Image (cartoon, rainbow, N blue to C red; front, side, top):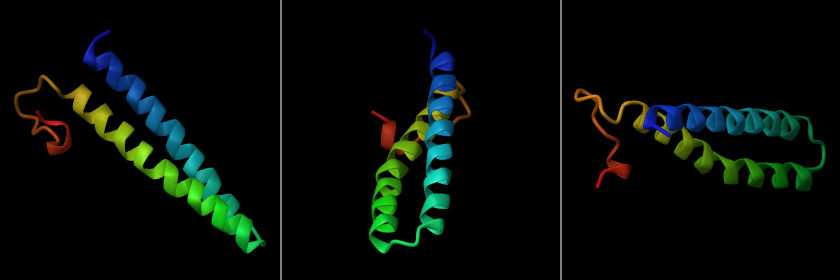
Length: 77
């Protein structure tokens, strides 16, 4: 598997996680019970770092060999 192929998988995963976050935010807004809304917010907060990492890795792997691409400092060796 090439890095470009991996980037597509990372992007797909990021999109799926982002879609779930959007669904959970909608459910949180509609929730009348404060405790249920708090639990939804906790789930959203747990998913946000996963989404950011997938999104960052998609960009990194897509442009890894581009000379003009400035690599993300978080993933640089």
